Length: 368
Image (cartoon, rainbow, N blue to C red; front, side):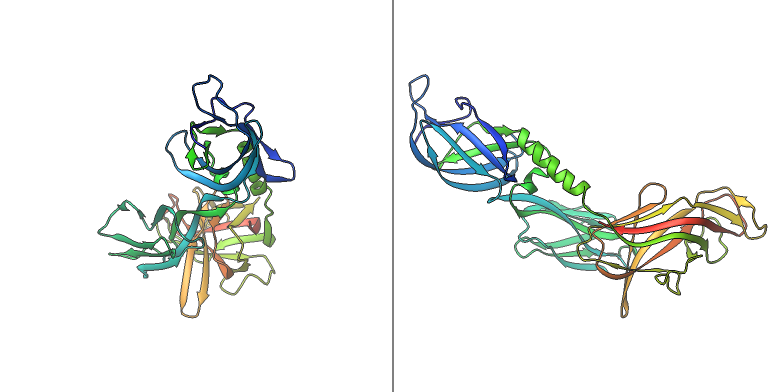
């Protein structure tokens, strides 16, 4: 079947979601021969269809492909469903490890193999892509796309304790959802009996419907409460001076067994957790003088939350990202039994000893 044409001469081309499955898309169109007749020449029979989706009208990155197989054509009209049996190009972000101030080599194997490209490794002030390192004299990477192994090597000094080293990369995922979750434009390209048709058709309505469905699944993903402390006080464990620290913060006024003797919180993080969330509500955080009890000192306490795990002689730490006023996040937290502790960096104009006090706080720890 040679000299086919679609697109401009396509009649009634549209894509709709199939009711039985929101992952299926129905595609309908009209296929004719190109010849000297103004309206072309109709076709009846069958043809082999192969579908690809790109992120641009011409060129661009392929984000989905599916072998449709033989499709019946009746008076040039055809119809088929797609979206479940193909492969998307998705992007994942994973934690390679966390700095401890000593380790300079971080080995890791990604969860989705092979890596197709788009490999970006960052952390500790440096980054690496397939084009090279941000500073080849201080940071190097060895990456094998086929087996997914990565070695991130800090050549001169180790990243500080708690600094996260992460990798983002492209990989295959089943079905069309991964491709459409990337956002941006989607352009469909058909190959019929080995001949690639032109121009590409832009997908609009259905991709947005599926993206909305994906967004709803993310928004509605249940959060699970690991620990709820409805009444807890925070207090620095020793007198502080501005510009020094950080200083350890103790947790008081709670009888929860999860608070250990070191004033850390014991929690168990499930393996499927994608984000760890800590929220403080209601409580006020203030500086007070240790010499003049009850005298408040102007300043903004800089609270830091740290997640740590002890494995015999090996201790790893991760610093949670501050989000908003009293909320902390950690993406892709390590699973298992962990401890959460708090420190404070005093920032004030007060030159003498002072302390942090935070009363009537409510602390909740969640994962999603």
